[in-house]
Image (cartoon, rainbow, N blue to C red; front, top):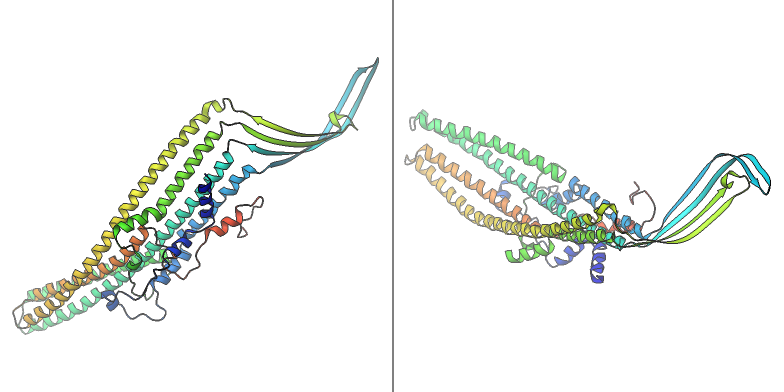
Length: 489
């Protein structure tokens, strides 16, 4: 229908990123790198002017990540489907020629006489044929529509990859921050336990505590060192993941803030936005359009085909007789009516295309269901992380007070060394829980942004040159000849 075609062509000539930028232009990202201001900010050293921020890290991932770049190449390859489809509207022109040697012996009676002779001559011919299709059951038209839908679907796939890369980059960034903070906590815990062991040994030497107390302190210190090495291994693993996604080693990462102010106000609004904007849903809908076009393409094989054929041929030494050239030119209208072809395979192909259309429609429904579930799950994780932060803050404060009290009571003999060690371990655990919850909140905010289909470089205001898929599309959509790509390859 005309209005559908206009929407498709408008979509091909515009980018989803531009629409995203317009939809969120009134929602700026305030204090993007203000930092958490909680445990992570307290435990990390003050960043220098050359410190890496979340924004700069994601910009590097957007520009350099190989998954992102190969997806862009895939979209450029998908663009070529349109000139291939529109080729059906263009003429086919071919030239042919031949050259060789001919030996002719002729003995023919003519008017009471006998004409005979032997001729050894060169023979050859040249010709040009042009064929222009006038009607083929609208197969070319529907092939063009299918190509356009596939191109739009490829762009949505690229946008989905962009979201995944940015989400993975934010997760890797926060994992390094979290593991660095945990490593510092465990290093500080070792220092505290070493001092605790020294004091316990001093008190044992003067008979204030038993050998059991010394053994308990030694055991806690050994366990703390083991936890430190495990935390160190986790950090190295996440540094490797960071390098894989961002493209560089992490150095002096700044604390990162959540992006909750960019999110919808509630989960219902998030679901509605995801149904309308998520690239996986949009890609599935474009697949439905492509499948519908394929049904019409298959049905077009049952329609008559009308061609206009023009040809010209020049023959030298016709029939091997020297001095007898010929020239032939023709203009023909050709109609082909299929009656029963390919043993009925055409009918099977039509039925198959209809089944695949049904499959594509079911896949679109499945994609909506999956996206909706992802939105609800990620929103719940964000709310949980916020609640855990509040409880962890209270737990850390209470644990600090409790540890100070237990230490004072231990000095006057009202508490044992084991009580002090347990209080110290509890405080460490609550601080680790707080750091983890802070990381989970930031990551969950990016996950929610991704599940609603808005986690793009434009919406995050990254300092990058945004990739515009319409540039390559406009360069090749009307190309008739040429084997070089627009970038010269």
